[in-house]
Structure formats: structure tokens, C-alpha cells
Image (tube, rainbow, N blue to C red):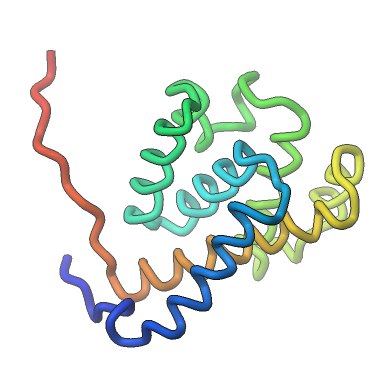
Length: 154
């Protein structure tokens, strides 16, 4: 697979605007970084964005999140690793990422109210939208993730 265009060079102003929102979510929104990692990983998995999955897994590891927690994001419904708060965020992330099919149903929204204020729900929704923008750039324009040296099986 080859990159279609280098979007960072083609429209640096657009990327800078998205990066500013990224900085807000990461540094100013007050969202729990663990929840932002969940959003970024799950949306990127759904969207099939290898570039973003690779990047967000690396970031989650760097920030000390456990391998089991990271590995089971893709199967969160079947795992007891995630608490009710995280499950609400994961369900909302899936609903919004698949919005054309889901319609963002009340069944996925209402559990958020048990754990988050209206402001936090709004910020979580912005975070979901943000990673979906990055995913669409990376998948649509075929951004390539880095490739590590192969590791031999033991």
C-alpha cells in the first residue's frame, strides 16, 4: 500500500486546525486520558485504521496502560477488564463511529448520564469525532504506519 498524498504537506493549515483540537482534547478538556485512549483505540479499530491503531497502542503502553487492557479493547463486551464507566464510553464510541447504521441510539447514550455530566458527554463526543477525522485522513489518503523489525516466534 502506498500513500495517496501526504496530507500534512498538502494542507498543513487543515492538519494544524485538527491538531489544535487534538491538543484541546488531550490537555484542556479535563477528560480522563484512559477514556481518550479507549475512544482512540476503539474508533480506529472499527475504521480499520492501521496507522492510528499502531500509534494509539504505542501511546497507551507508554502511559502505563496494561497489555491485557489494550488487547481486549476490540472485545470489550466479552471482557470483565472494563468498568461500567469505560463500557459506556466504548458503547458511545461505537455508536458514533457507526452513526449511519446506529443513529446514536438512546440505549447507548443513557448509560453515559450515569457517569458523566453534560459537559463531559459533550467533550467525549468531540473526542470521538476527532479520532474519526484522523481515521478518515489516514485511511482515505493511505497513511502508512511505521514497521518495526520482525520478531521471531519463541
